[in-house]
Image 1 (spheres, one colour):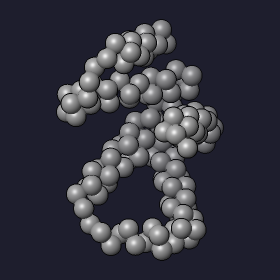
Image 2 (image 1 turned 180 degrees about the horizontal axis):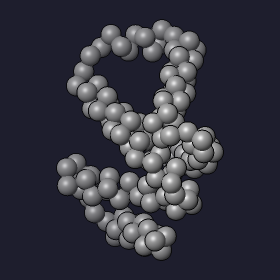
Image 3 (image 1 turned 30 degrees about the horizontal axis):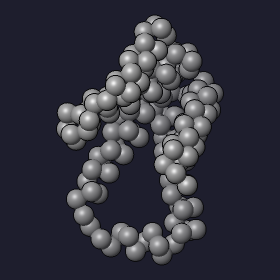
Length: 139
């Protein structure tokens, strides 16, 4: 399967989740919502470990520097970012806050150019301009 297929599956999944979470947050505070979301992640990991078993456990024997960055990314995205997102989702319209929250590719684009040496192209610049235009139109 191509990277674009996986990206499409990601978009489809992530596109459905805020609607489910908005319903779930209707009678819960965002911090409790984060707890239950994290519980869903733990259940998913437990099932994965049961299904994949030794193939995954053997990977834990190797320690490398990438682990720090993955743990930091998980903390930032799945904890800090999710708290911010749940506060916006709880108090705002999903049709407005989700697209604004989903402008993270713009940030990644800029940081990729600054820190990873990625190239700026007209196509990428045009895509980023459309993201900015979309946010302006939502306001």
